Length: 291
Image (cartoon, rainbow, N blue to C red; front, side, top):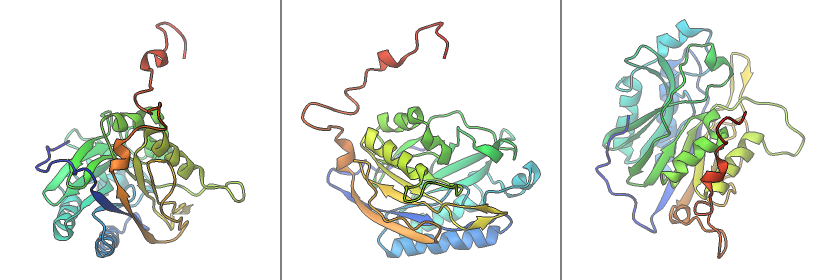
């Protein structure tokens, strides 16, 4: 669901301060999750944030026992969770992007995200690429492209976690003019070679670089039902470099001020452009050829 903007796109030269909120939601603690979100958004606003990104399934926690448990916490887009985010956006005059479990009119439950601004709910999105237990907990994959919304603070696209690992999907948002791509994520903690940056962060750096757009990912932290979380929230510039320091495994709110005009310029050098140099006709597999 996308609602037309009552605002024009951000004027050229406008800077925007973005916050990614690294909190620790828990399944079964809806009241606590809402309190964590309220506190995080309030703190981000006090630090000057105009766009605030929350983790995947921030309102419910993530590690469900089964589909029955998931359904007890899933809500429609006009439920209490999104209404509270609308109130927070209006109170603090900002944009909020975050993840929630959507109970849809079609009877399915989706791993979803919403974008709200001071005027209310602007768009929802359903995660298209399900990860691991999501396939057995009762989530249905979405099948619509990531939204790109004109907001008072620029053109913002968003998708959820594993979606960010599919370059074709990320490219759709970039080609639709996203200047800032927001990603509510829940990244499990996995072993990695000593001294190496987590692979999830490397991949979102690549998303930013190859599309020349900013990317802001809000990861969760803590341990939930035996699963440890990375806590790898980051804000990445249009060249693909982090502009926030990693706070792996900690609760934290990271902020950065971005000049979105940099994401409108797709040039790399005097003769190259990451969008204009594309040759889509070469990328299509010939009919009948095996994948």
